[in-house]
Image 1 (tube, rainbow, N blue to C red):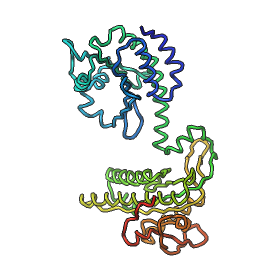
Image 2: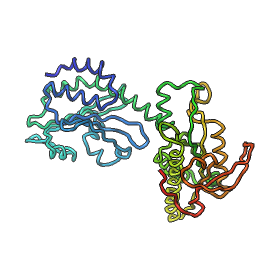
Image 3: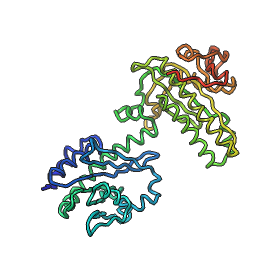
Image 4: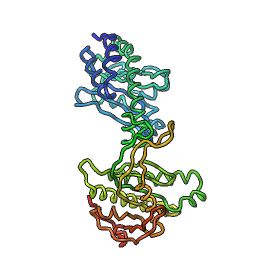
Length: 401
């Protein structure tokens, strides 16, 4: 028989140290099974704080090797699937949804209940679990596959657990929220370092990296002539393409500067400079492939094409907290970053989408050709710039990884 007080003591004690909802659900399911609960499925439904994801379900079943995580896009809450579901019903009423799935009292009013019964479930309950002062109402679901299902006493015991269970889940959700928001706004590596305590101005370290600068051409004039909503849609599509290409090649996007993007590809951890140069060049080419595909769509819609310039340079950067005492930015700075920015400014003048420094050309495993010697603003000596040989021929550079 379940002792609610014993489970509550565990929830408010050792369970709080578990790293995430998945191991919490696994451990709780094991305790309920030991107490005689005829569990076929146990689940949490918890909020998420990501641009595209609003919630996640964590599902335990005896037959699964591990807890399964299912993510739900934000648009789901506006669909008939959500509104005509136990979760939609619970959110509307704030009450438990309890349904028998077999026998004379069977109630399969929601499509998902029919699916559960077809899979072998006999009894279902979704209990509201509240965070704080009703900031969020989440769901705790139970399903059984034995003919008699759950007893009323078993459901009542679970209800006694919910305040403590909700408190532990809220801690985990807030922890995830902090990590997800930091990942979204400052990037994964910077967020990990901030969470590890690097929050003091001047806390920085030097590292070698390929520096990538990307800037949309003609943005100022375009912004003046384009309606707000159309401009935002264009920028979001452009950023999606370039950021996706950089991340896909293993780079880190550190900053958006208007229509510009600053990213790095780290050297080290067993990777030599040639590999980092190849990956960054592949990322740049993938970005332009995406921009070209976007331009085909835009021209079919009667819209003008866009273009961009990308600079690639290799050097030492200072990576860390820079700013005022109460307003910091986690980014890279240094003369090599400035040099990369100046090279990007040359792309339009030289007439090349991609320009690299001579240092990058020396290290790159992909053949680059000279695009001439230019004087960069703020740099004392004229600099020889390079461009992919395939760009001169209008070809695509093969994968050099």
